[in-house]
Structure formats: structure tokens, C-alpha cells
Length: 611
Image 1 (cartoon, helix red, strand yellow):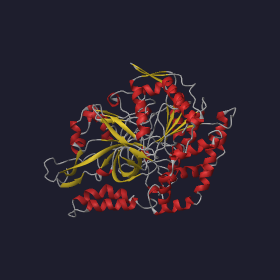
Image 2 (tube, helix red, strand yellow):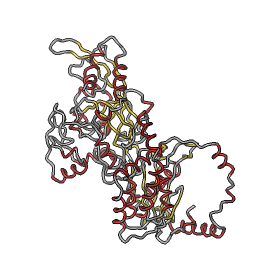
Image 3 (cartoon, one colour):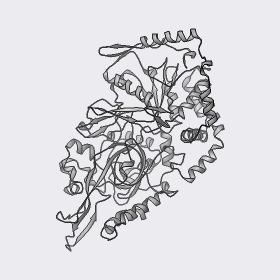
Image 4 (tube, helix red, strand yellow):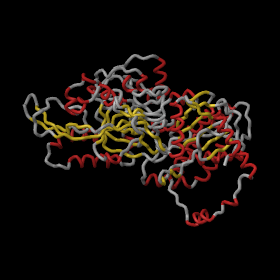
């Protein structure tokens, strides 16, 4: 409450003070308070708390990915108003605000124009349900704001039940208004529910924004609040696709709900550049505040990971936590390996490689070569629902993941690479705009016979570049811009994948359960929640721990004679070369109109073809 008071009233009061250091002192106070050990427990989160529960102009936090960066905007940092009753001039501060006070003196010489940057931020794509649930349980308890009374919009029972399922505990409390109902007692527009989530499928339409208002989530089916973050300092320290935990002042002024030429003139006074925007740009850059709130940044903390079971910042608490967990690191690894072995139908070798894949991380780059990546192709996977259940198990272990079903329809219609929309002047997101260390599960068992069109070929090429170079070439129409990434890619297939990989391991099942669904469900249910949490901590911790290679190991590695290591006999190597060329000819044939995908069910690699 004290921090809200400082932010709400200190700014204009201090501006009239002769001390020029007032702003630095206020920011220093905020940053000091937010670095306290228990700060996460008393600052409400936009990720976990419905918007209508939060008080306008209060301090909130937001765990997000920087999806787009808009052009810098100018605003009235300092302006002067005239009191209608006393005719006295009063200096006002425009910082951390979206709307000016009434009675602005346009002829005042004290007006100061300042500049700020706007980031379009979305919740971290593919965040696992368990990570969201644990974050919610540890979040600050918030009751609905009493400063305004949102009006309840009529909805169907199906929508209410859907809210109950997606918001397990907070939504079971009595409601006084819809999540995107009214703001400050004024109509904020009872907006259709589909505008609060990503479309179920993404197409290659050049300008999605021009036709309708959407939240531009990278992944289809995503839910959660998007946010316009106003940044005042440290602009060079942020870049596209950063994952951040932002602390700032929430702004949901009802004036921001009105689009285009109907906007209040006072809003244009605070940000004069808005009058020069096209309707398409206004729709993309100034969506209704009831749908996309504004967050004026005070402090932002880069997230090394988003696992809520680990401390998120390098503090003394994190060091103590790591030290205590290192004691049982070996035993947890052995238990996790046994668990993965059961999941992979008794194949211990495949389980070892899957574990190495899950903890892999790009730790550095040498020229264009990313070091540390480990893309795994798990071939010979049973058909039906095995790969889907395998993904669900992986999803239960990692904080961020996404399963891409590589059917012909998906490859030909889905937008994987982000594209610049010059009409709306924004970056239209794609499914490969993901946070670092996201587990991307490519299910190639869904690929059937047919033809890839030009869009499908581009998507396959983008996946190949992602796997080989850990980069995504964003489409800016006139050129492509390369963005490095750090994404763990697991490919499941029947035969050897058509995509490149660092290692291909054919699955060798040791058990053949009569009911695969029941078998995998039983294995997962046999694990206690505490044990699963240890697996989650192990995978995140093993990825972030510092390590060094001793001189002795380096020397041994440099002097090892690989000529003595012959995994294949000469005849086997010849068979492998012949088999590979036959497989490539059988799988893909180029045609003038695209690429034909042939029947690959007969193409199964023997175990000695794996390495």
C-alpha cells in the first residue's frame, strides 16, 4: 500500500520540488523493496490474478516474453494544468500515466516532452499447467478491488465451467464481474471470449491484425493476458524474445478502450504521435485496456528459467537451495532414469539419451555453431497414441513445451516463422517464437502421404535451420532477419526423420503392453507428486549449473585415437550408405509444384544405423 501511495502521489508533488534527484530516489526505493526475499508473495501477478481483481494504478508483476517492440513514443513528461476554481497553475508529471489531467495549459513553457519505449508482451508460450498452478499457489492473495464495481456480463454455463477448469481455485470464489467486463465502473466492452486466447490454428495471412483484433500469441490455443509495457530506462538491456518478470504500475483507464478517431483528446495530448497512426496501427498498438492493460515498468528481472520450484534470481537463497539439492542429485538422476526407462517401454539406452536431451543447453556459440544443443530423433515409435502420451509425460517434467503434430495439413497451413506486418506495423507471431529452453516436441509419426506446398517447404526448412543452427529467420518480406534461439527439439518418428538431428536412437521396446494408454497412465500415477517435483528441479538445475572441464580430461580427449573405434564393420557401413540413399529417394521426390511425401512405413533403420 505504501508503494502504491508513493507512485500515485509522489510524482506530481516531487516534480514541483527543486530537488532534481526525486525520480532516481523513487526508483531506487522501488527496486530495493522488490529485491526483498518475500517481495514475490505480496505483489499480485497478472499471470495469476484476474484483471478485475486488481486496483488501477497499483503495483503488479507480470511473467512474460517480449513478443514485439514498437517504435519509441513521445509523451508529456511534465505539463501544467490550470485549476478551474482558483486559476492556479499546477505542474503535473506524465510519467507512469496514459492520460493527462484535465485543464492542460497548452501554452505553458514548463511543458517537457519525453520519450519511452513500448513492448508488446505475452505470457511465456507453452508454459506447462503444473508451472502455472504452482505459481498461482505461491502468489499474493488478492480480493476484488473496491474502487470500482465491474458489471457481470451474461455468459453461458459452458463458459463458466470452462473458467472453473482453467482457473482452478481463484475462479471458484464468488465473482462480481467478468474478467474483461467494466473498468472503473464504465463499460469496458463485454468482449467475446475468443479475443482472450490465441486462434486454434494460424494461417499465413499477411496481415492478421487488419481483419480483427487478436492477442498475437505465438502458439495456438494459448490463454492469458497480453500487456503493453511502457519502458522508461535501460532500453538497451532488453531484446526481442527475452523472458522477464516485470514489476510496474497497472493502467486500465477506460479512455484507452476507445479506438481510432473516437479517442479522447486528452489521451492524444499525452502521446501526440498517436494522431499520426493509421487505423490498422492504432488497432494493433492501442487495443482496449480492458483486454490489453498497460504496465508502466519500474523494474524488470530477466528470467534464467520459469520453474517455480527453483529460486528465480541468483541470491543467497538460491545458493543454499542448490547446495542442499546437490546432495541427492545422483539418487534423483537414477530414479528419473528408471522412470524414463519404463516410459520408453524398457529401453534403457533410449532413456539415457532422452535424459541427456532434456538437460541440454546452448551454452555458447563459436561463429555460427551453437555448442551444447542436442536434438534427439527417437525413431521406431509405436503408432496410435504413444507419442501423444510421451509428450504429456515430458510436459509434466519441463516448465515449457509444445507439441507440433507434423501432419501435411499442419505443415502447409500453420505459420511457424514470425512475419512483419507493415500495414499494422507489428510483428505477427509464429509458433517458433518461443522462450529459451522450451521443449519442442515434433511428432513426425503424424506425417502421411501427400504434397507439401511452398508454405510447407518453408516450414520444413525453418525447422531444419532451428535444429542445425538454433536460429529462426524472421520474415520481413524484403529480407530475412536472423534471431538466435535456444530450443530443445525432440523428434519422434517411425523411421529415420526427414529432419536433421544430433543423434538418432531407434526405440527397442523390451515390453509390449496390451493397452499402451493404461500402461503409461499407471507408470505416471505411480510417481508421487514430491518425486515428480524432484525430477522437475533436477532437469532445470542440471541445465543451469556451472561446470568446468579439467585439463586432464581435455588432454585425454585430445590424444584419444578414434581410428581404433569402429562401431560398424565395412560391410555394415556399405549397407548403411545404400539404405540411406534408398530411404532418401523413397521419402522425398522434388516436383515442380512442391515436395511429395511418399509412404515411409517400410523404411525402418536397424540399430547399428543410429550412430
